[in-house]
Structure formats: structure tokens, C-alpha cells
Length: 374
Image (cartoon, rainbow, N blue to C red; front, top):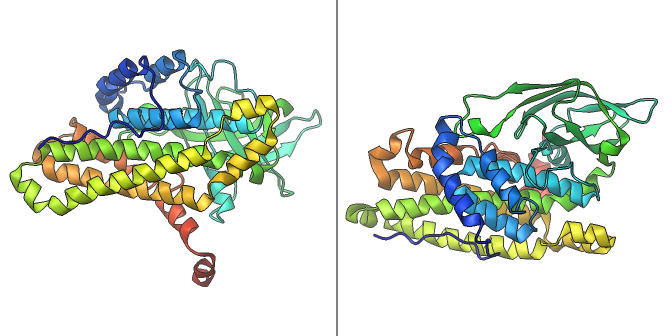
């Protein structure tokens, strides 16, 4: 049985120069997974092509193609591009070299969205200094792309109730990183626990103090990039499942194989429609001072639509990797196999922020949510 290759979303045409970079990312996938390979070799190459700062449709197409080959590398791209978006939607200039991939950006935004959902309080506390700067203390339990020279974008709160989005240099005095190691498929992503002790934040590194507006403007890119990543991994698993299915598997797993095909195509259509509705070039809008365009883009797709697509593509990825394991059989159980790697990559999705529990919580109707509270 020949598997249909789900290689494109149809959102944008990747430039020819990206294709050899993607193929090299696939060749590095085993090293990134098992041998400490560096995903940033790929991101630097993409940066040299100007693709790290591409508009949203091309960026979702790119992360989808990358996740088909190495989801850990796609995850690094998600964190970096999301942090670029945080700068653009606030009218801030990213650190020099970030758009070209010469330094890494990290997204520490999970606490801001968890707080919005009523699932916790921002753990990073700011105090004002006489010179107009801030001092930040607290612990961010998980952040990735914490490479030397990186900048992290994160939310902070004051005890008086104010909130802000700031950026902090990973190597600044008072910043401590405890590496997270022994992770399934993600050891190469420079993930760690971030500990801040009286870290100075100059006024110029405060991106905005309007956190609700920031969340509304950043939400689409944050979630749609994750959705593209999930769908890329799901498609690669479904391709492998169909290619490995012998006549017996084709017969006894016919319903699951057909459901996988139909679900992927339906969710691909949902993702493409949602990206196109949300797409806008933040840099052009910023440079033109077109606040109205930014507001229209933020309202083009409802948060519920974004959350629904993100949840459904993640659930499909879990089903797809399980189906691949069924058809590939015992050889897919070896840790060095692509089947095993994809299963471990998919195992991260229920806990990636926003977690599956967080997403499901957001989709509970308001009246049901109220009744469920103690």
C-alpha cells in the first residue's frame, strides 16, 4: 500500500532554498533525539534564508514541514518565532540577530495565558527601582531555547496588581538555569527551569504593560504555529502507518486508517482557513502605524476557534502515532526508530502549554464551568 504523502498544507510555497535545509533537519533528527544533536543548526540555516521572520502563513507551512522531519527542531522554531511575534505585536524591535537566527529567543508566556484562564498566578514578581528599571524575582518552571546569548520574553506582576511583558537576557546577572534533561525527544531543545533573583530589567526591555491586549494580539500566532507543528507530526505518522500496513493490517485496521485520512484532511482545512483569517504582517502594520489592522487581525478569529483547532490536531497526533505503532510492529519499538521517536514527540503534546487540560477547560461553556466549581 502506498501512503499519500501529506507534505503540504497549501498555505504558502516554501522557497527552493528551504528544501535542502529541511532534508538536513530530517537527517539530524536521530542525533537531536538520541545523541545531543543541536536543532539550532537548522534554525541558523533558516535564518540565513530570512525564513525565521516570515509572515504567518509561510511560517505555519514551514513549521509543518519541519515537524514532519523533526518535531524537536520544529518546537525550537515555535518558541523562537513566537517570541519574535511578541516583539512585533508590541511595536518593539527584536534583539539584533534574532531575525537572522544568530541568537535564540525563548517564549516564557505560559503563565500569562494560564492566569487568564484562572489556572494560576504569574510567578515572576517585579518591583520598581528608583532609576525607572524593574527588579524581577521568581521561578519559571519550564522554558526552552535557553541557549547562551538567548533572550526570554515573559510576563511579570507587581504585588499591587499591575502586569507587564518583559524581555530578559538569559546571561544577565541574577538569572539561573537548571537544565531539564532526560526528556522524551526534547533533550536537544535547551529546556530548563529559569530562576530569577533581583534581575534588572531596564525600561526599554518592558515590551508592554497592557497584558490583556498583548494576549489578544499574540494568541493567534502562538496557537496556530503549535497547530501546524502537530499536524506535521500527525501527517508523518499517518504516512508511515499506511506505508507499513500489510494486507492484514489494511483489513483489520481499515476503519482507523480511513478515519486518520479523513481527520487529517478535515483538520488541515480548518487550520488553513483559520490561518488565512488571522494572517497579517505585524511588521508592516507596525511600520505603517496601522493599529486598526492589528485590532482587526486579533478579532478575525475567535479564541475559541484557535483553541479548538489546537486541541483537535494534538488529539489526532496521538491517534496517528499509535496507529503507526500498530502497523509498523516490533521494529518500531526500538528507541532509534523513527516510529519510536514520533511516539515520544507526540507524548509531549498533552503537557505542552497550553496543556490538554488547559485547552479543554477553555472549551467548557461558561455556565458548565461555573457549575463545576466548588
